[in-house]
Length: 197
Image: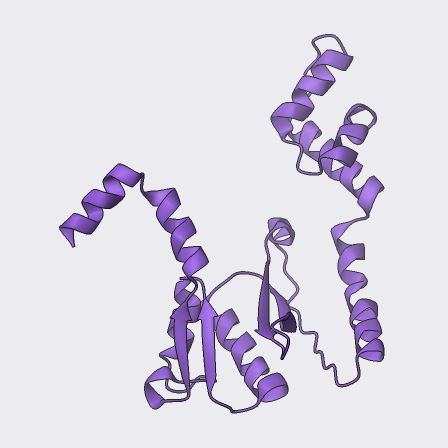
């Protein structure tokens, strides 16, 4: 019953909140409010019916990578995974991406990885893959956000590129710095912050 009520709203907004789902069900069934877990299960079922399940989506990953490899000679990929008994882990995950610029100053995707979380371990693994399989052991200028995992990768002597060893330079993305400053400071307290420096 919950699925029937919220399915069209899920089609338009896949991140429909449980609170919104509750309001839709209450309106459709004149004040009847299902429990939270029923609303949650109904939302998950509606998403699966409309867009497929999480498991089926991940099963499409290898055929997608094979198609990319077929149409882009020289493409390499690897798939490793760790099964988990924790059902909430399927809602986590991060996409790590490395991009460069071609001779015409156009953005060029070099590599990507789906990982459980952003950390020193996952960024280290990704950078080692990038170093061994994509770029080679060449001097690099890496521009990234301020994530501590990325910063630590370039200060690790036994990693892919070691900044203090002259193997790379790591710089921070000015766009990310500006966005972080805008989130943290108003103009008034940012000026105060600069004066305090």
